[in-house]
Every structure is written in structure tokens, then in C-alpha cells.
Image (cartoon, rainbow, N blue to C red; front, side, top):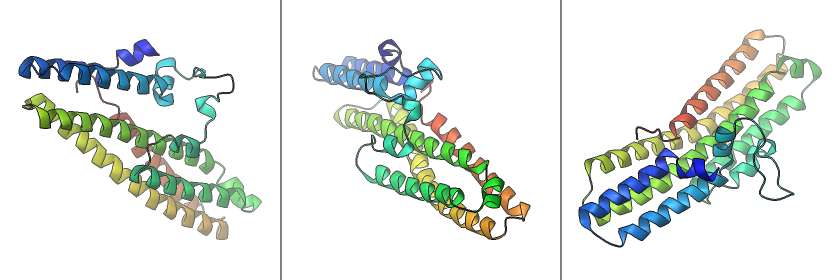
Length: 233
């Protein structure tokens, strides 16, 4: 995990940016700043359960203590508590609160409704997990953007650095918009579940709900992939 985190493209990029800034400005303080930033990114990546799953596949995630719980068994609410305190975490927790109400509405409905919406529950769980993935990627991107912003303010910015900063800011804005939209869509899904429980024999309502869930999962999955900086960046 440490080797994979040390060679992660975004982390190596920080070293390259720091080295380039030092060679350009010969400001000695950039050396310890770059090293500390790189070490922090490696440490955070090595402990990130999402990154661990990507490196190790779908097998068991390394445990930090005998009582540790595998990442795959953690609820999205618990994973959300790992996010830094702030507006992003509050919006994600609010969306997860609605998500739990939607699941409860399905699980406490009558037998006919539960059978009709049997496929909706795993889709909801997947959407909740992907929402947290997006939020975690958003926070990582925001951290790197802050570092790049500080470097830009303290030294003559290069064109590549400015482009990287703009790209990160665009991804952060996209994540913020999707988190807000997900909250609203989960509210709509809750209303759709209520309507299906009243009219469970109407297949069009069920089809519409499943289509909404598929669309939500597709957007969140695409955005979570986008929030992982690519090697070309």
C-alpha cells in the first residue's frame, strides 16, 4: 500500500511541481513544504479505504488493528464521518439521512410492494456508497487545490500549474453540484416509493423508480472516476 501510495500519479505530481517551483525560484522553503505535502498525501492515500480497494482488488482490506472492520462492511454513514467537518460532510450526511428513510419505507411496506421493489434496495445502497466516494474524492481534490493555490500565490505560477488548478476547481464544482442534486433526487425517490406502495400494481411507477436509481448510480460512478486525478493531469 505504501509503495502504491508513493507512486500514485497525483502524489508524484506534487513532487514534480515542488521541484519545478524550487528550480524556478530557488526558494529553499519550497523543499520542506513539498516533502511534507508529499508525505501527507502518501499517508492519507495509504489509509484511504477506496484507494485500498482499488490497489488490492475486491479482497480483504488490510486491518489497522485486531478489532478493525473491513472497509467493505462499513456503512456509508460511518464512512461519511471520516470526511473533514464542513459543508460537504453536512450535505452528504443529510443525503444519507434521506437514503435511510427511503430504504426504511421499502422495508416496512407491505409484501407486494417489497417484492416489487426488491431490486431497488441494492441500487440504493450502491448510490449511497458512491455518494461518499464522490465526497471523499472532492475533499482530496480540494486539499491538493489549496496546496497549488498557495504555491501559485507564493511564486510565479506556471501555465501547467494554473491549468491543473483550474481542472481541480472544475471537478470540485461538479462534485458539489452532484451532491446537492443527489439529496434532491433521494427526496423524489422517497415520494415515488410512497406512490408505489399505494399503487403497487402499476409497473410504470416501478420502472420509473428503477430508471431513476440507475441514472443516479451512473452519474455518481462517472463522477467518482473523474474525482480520481488521471496520470495525464
